[in-house]
Image (cartoon, rainbow, N blue to C red):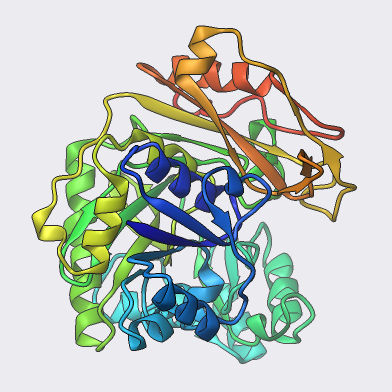
Length: 421
């Protein structure tokens, strides 16, 4: 099968790697891909979605998989489907579950899906009044897409009011902050869950935990994610069942009633309070770095799962998972997340250790290729993934792999998966 993957990060590399590892003879294309994806397939440079759809049609691309949120919110799925192409991802309308936090919160309320008490408004006075009714800390969110950075957890009412003022004035996030959500802070533990959906049916993947903060011990600024592990021992069968029945099923039924059936990856950010799952947020694509650890845990065909989801046929598939654990450690560039970094050559030691060879690998993200040399070009550069029969074994192997990777200014956390250990 010819498969096109949209995106340039570690998430897209990992999906491509999982498909390449099936050894089924699939031919892969990436738009735009990164400096390492051309080891898995062909990188394209076709930015216009209509032109890209024409390329897919002319070259008999049988499946397109969309990685990041921006093309989904821009309607790439609608463009491909209008040309009769098979594409995995939600329509522009369904992608509002991530594209607008206001849409998402109002949807949750309408369909009685558990979520935190909130107010959505563009009025600074109204936001301030509601803020005063909440205990601290207070959560303030910008409505639109802010690349994972539009959420402020304010420790005092004054701090919350400053965040509200900065967002509504356009100072913080421009147009993305012209409407805000002020909501109660939930005290529990956070989980990342991913459901592969075809509009009617879904498959829930193993629960993961992400590490958002830059530094060890969950200190420093929020990032796109510095590491993750799965499956988490904090989830039992009862909790999985609650998530399926109380969150995913009513979401799919509700989206059909809204005339926007949800197809694609539904990411549910969950806060577990007293063993009850409460919805923090939806995203309409895989998390990164969670995707990097979930893909290698799948023992059944990844390409088949995406194809069946894209053709409304998930009822006829059996998805199987490894009994192992996976831990991913993100290596970031020197100035992440504060600013850009000078490109630095990446040197990866030759692997002589059978354990590292067999149980670890690297997923590349912020890298470019020049004169056959790989360079770290800023942001999150790559993820070192380890697998094992215990979380500790997987973590130790991931860090063994980290020891093989060298570039100027590299930084990474040394405590990934500490919650479970």
